[in-house]
Every structure is written in structure tokens, then in C-alpha cells.
Length: 320
Image (cartoon, rainbow, N blue to C red; front, top):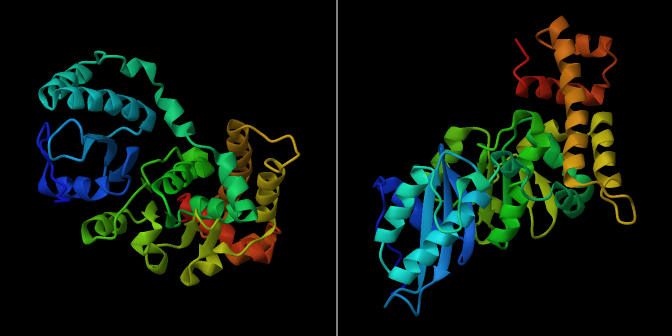
């Protein structure tokens, strides 16, 4: 009939979470993906079950956790999916779940085989720079200034690969909690975005999110390789000398025919340039916690950079 049902859960989940899981399971028709609602990461693994369970075309397993580690949960859900398809029963999964909670191995999966820190380095920031070119500096600006970013793409793979690396542009914060990798345009999920204040949210292009500029300050179109500033946010994205320095690093370090830097070196390079800006803002705010135009002029900060420096200080919580 094409119906999607939550067959069972352990432990039990509330009706709102169940609804979100069911709705999101359709966003990525096969394999693994992840998203987040409020403080909980949601991991999904979908496989075909046409020849296994009568009347069931696909099975999606989902795990909910406060921890961010896509690779760890992808491997676990793949093992659990194989167990479920082999037995068509949740009993082996409950047994495996209890093993996981006790820190034991489940078949070939062991939690100790995954370094929590490596999850933060997933994806390729170099691919982001190569995809969006000079406009990558706009994405960096949005992350530094804690702006609302929406990523759209024709496929969930495009959205996920783009959105996952965005927090790397503000590495010092180590904040992946702002991600909402795949979201639907429904009241429940939009309410979570609104209550978050600052977020990076991913939508499929078919969702119509591109036309909802009330949801974003910056729109990143992964399919079209375009970045669009919402009309209401344009003043905050005016470019100055500081932006040119960062953009130059992004382009020169990933240009074809050049000695392209590894992703880890790109993260370090952006971090050092960002840190220089933040330290300058800290120094100025130590003299004047309001960071007035006179203070910026006295420090010979170009007029074109005044608003950016003020917003950077505001994002870092430096203003009185």
C-alpha cells in the first residue's frame, strides 16, 4: 500500500519522535544517513526486504543517540540490519542493543574501534572549496557570524556531504550540535529550527526550501554550486580585506595544478586566519566593550570591515 509504519522500538519513544523518524526515513531511500532533532542525533539505515519479509519492501533501522559519530552508527546499523533481515524478528536486535550498552562487541562491530574525534573530521572541506570557489568565503562568514544556513540539493548525498563539513569552518567552537542534516518542511521540524536560533539545515530541493528565505540568511545550493545571500542579510555579508585574505587561501590551496593541501591542513589554515580575526576583536573589546565606530577607526580598521568586526565580536560574546 506504500504505507510506512514504525513496527517496534526499544526502549519506547514518544509519538513526536516516531513521526519525525517515519517522515525522515523517506528522505534517503537506500543505505545510511543521519539527522538531528533537538538534542538527539538520529541515524538511519535502509535496506530492501522484498525477498525476506512478506509484504514489506524496505526496512529502515534507526538509532538515537546524544553522540555525533556517523561512521560508528553506520557500521552498527549495518550489522543490526543484517541480523533483522536474517531473522525477521526484533529479538536479536534487543540482545545486540543490550550488548552495546554494556560496551560489548556485536558481531564485527566494537565501539572501541571508533575514535570520537575522527567524526569531526568527516567529509572533505577541500571539496567544499572546490565546489563553491570564491563563494566559499560567504559560507565561512556565515559560520563565523553564527548565521542561519540552509543547504539544498537534488539528492540527500549532496546535502549530507556539504552540510557535514560546515562546522569545520569554525573549528575553535567544536560545535556540531547546530547541524540538522536532513529536515522536512513540516511544523514540528521547523519549530525545532526556530527554537535553535542558529543552525545549518539540509533540505532536498524538491522540498521548496529555496523559496523560504525566512528560514535562512545564506542559501547553499549543492546541485547548482551556488551561494545566495537572503535580502535581509546582505549588509552582514559585505566583503572586506579580511574576507579577501581568507578567500585567497581557500582558492590557492585547492586550485588545480597547485600543491593542494590536505583537508586537515585546510582546516588549520582557516582556523589560524579566523583566530587572528577573533583575537583582534578581543583586543579591541578589551579597550571598548561596545566596539564603537571611533574605536574601530582608531585601530585603523577599514570602514568596509566595521560591521563584520562588530558582528564577529557579537558572535563570540565579546560585547558588553
